[in-house]
Length: 295
Image (cartoon, rainbow, N blue to C red; front, side, top):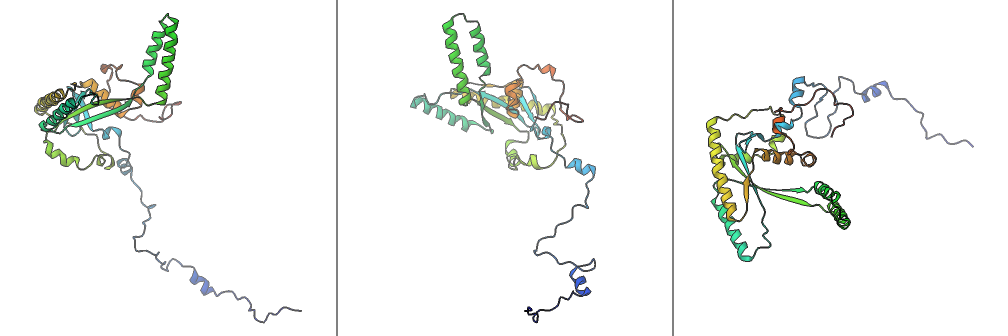
């Protein structure tokens, strides 16, 4: 029995004109994609010159620093303003009586109302390094002849070591930053309203040198001294001991602020300032030395 093939039609290849119509040639305009947005531009044809690449390079760390130098116990900022820092000791407010607390609160209120210039209160929390303390205890133990005291010191050292590993022992420092602006304190408020992040994302900046004449510097130094006396007098009324940081201590404060991890291992206290002969740090040329990876 043969199958029925009456309803089937033989296959006919399409005409050449139909095949050519399905494939667009160079003269036929292509159909635009759906959407009302602007069509993407081919970026492969654009090439950047070496000057444009250098101009669009990464921002240097030195250009992002907001200070220029430190001199006469002051920090000279990149915009020509000045800063002085007062370190304050803490007081135990919780152990005070109600009358003592009220006296501290009124003194703080009078201190804030007496200020005619802006101040910044800085609180820094750092993890305490117990290593030097344990090394000192180990040195005392080696010089101890009493066996009972040696056993007690071993237990105490083990307790301190375990406690430092399990809990974060923090040390808080309190500072009051006293500024001085050449253009006045009110005009600086508009400048600070632009935001700090503009300096990081505004592109690569050229290294600028801050120039201040002797008259302006002397005036700023005298005004900073008057403001420091006002701040330290207000702190004394609250029962808070305070002192101004010198130039070396200002450098250590900035160093520990910008390098929190490195400063715990490499301290500036053992470095002689006369050994620092290089003012600016530049990037080295060529590949890094063999055997040293990037940090």
